[in-house]
Length: 203
Image (tube, rainbow, N blue to C red; front, side):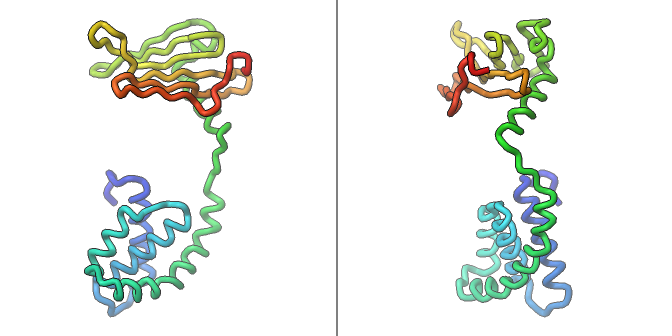
């Protein structure tokens, strides 16, 4: 496997190769039909589990089918039963292994990550921290109010301090939740407020 593939492309390719091993151990089908069947099967299975691989699969299939829609339709009909069988095998494994993260799970995980880099601010031992790395902009973390914090990269342009980027956060220390409030990137003239921003007295 090419280690540089995107995660979805990696998943699709693994299923493609698995399909080849299942469908074509002993076959007299030509390479074009084998590749179309394996890629079509990979597309159907990925789609069942919520992965859209159309960007990779459609062009791949069309290339081997020579844009022959009749041939493609016949091959897709051939893979229907194989797809059903493979989905039945994968479904219990998927349900067992998949972890459904709630919004609160993500906010808690973000709190833990923030705590790792900003503990002195959270404990009240500091109100400002700066991380510096050669060849990168400094990361500034600042206590803005009692439970409100800012993380930002800043640079100066024509005498003005520019945010690239600037994120304002509210931290609920009791529940260990980090809730993003605003996102700002000056060079793109972008500013966004969370769908349900919290007020200070909500925490």
